[in-house]
Image (cartoon, rainbow, N blue to C red; front, side):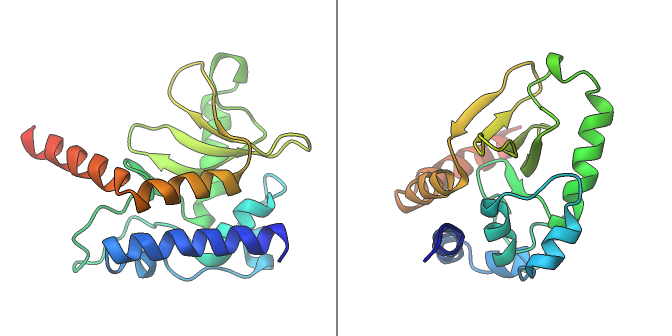
Length: 179
């Protein structure tokens, strides 16, 4: 298997774990796309193989929750997988809002793929020598989470296997209920 096929398999494994914990999750994210459909959806940047692998598995969350889905839609607690056909509009919005990238963690070479409810993102760098996964909160800091998307998926998978993310989602839901 090549790197992309490995990443696809790792991501499918992650989706299956989530599906076992939240039945209907994979259907919620809809069927993945073919390569040319992915490339036509994100035109602002060349698309790293890791994102090609993810979006060939699922399309992403489109904000329309089926009535029979009673679980959090998050891939990570507080973070949904951005629907592929919305990525360019998110990038354009970020570029318009943050015309001076020096004063915010988001940089023009990034492709956001996870959207946080607080307006922050997990992104993949598209530089030739940097394909890291970064977290960009609403401040002037950029946090490198992993050197590549494969490692990111493997870490998230381990957290799901140990039910660490389920624990945090339950706390998050409990906090919402308490408010």
